[in-house]
Length: 250
Image 1 (cartoon, rainbow, N blue to C red):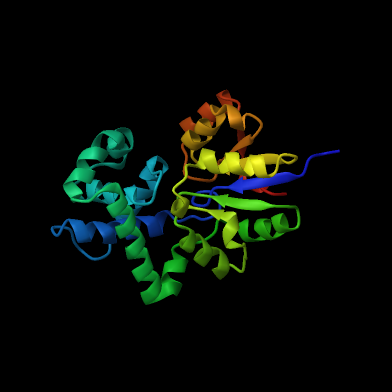
Image 2 (image 1 turned 180 degrees about the vertical axis):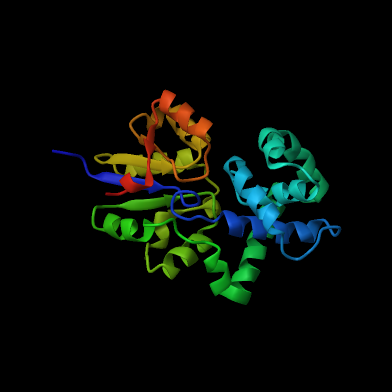
């Protein structure tokens, strides 16, 4: 008898194509920290450059730093290669702690949602076909969101798409827990199920892969998300399954 499957799904880059909204929110937040920046809305060129850099971003607040680097003239290729080196100095120059940057990023989003929710939602579309796939998934068994996004933003987007998931099945930034620890909790809660973790960032999957408590979790890289050809090649060599969107929840 086959085990029931529990799906743990990342949000940005797996369910939601939030790159443009993240870029704009990052820009708006950066305006609060660096008064020399203008205009109020980033040029399309910078948004396009941000999308190319998006695979290196782990948590939304880092968009503030990337948009500052793009404003200063950094190329997407250079930022992609050297962001880890720039990150500590940029945080210091911002005059904020990491927690302060996370709070600012969330407040900018909250203000945008308050002022113009329909506009904010248009910049947070679900990937093509995802709505139907999630509705089908509801009939197949349990599924959870495991993300570094703040939970209220996940709820806004899913509800707008008429997908209703209880709040206790969304594990976001608010929990102050890394994804591996959330997965361990889920594995322990469903000991007789098969856990499938679908993520678009290779490093997140590798962190799970090296955790002995998660050795039985099936790891899948969402090839339509924010990853590169090199990521996909590396995933295949490391025994991580590549998942095209047409095979997601069939």
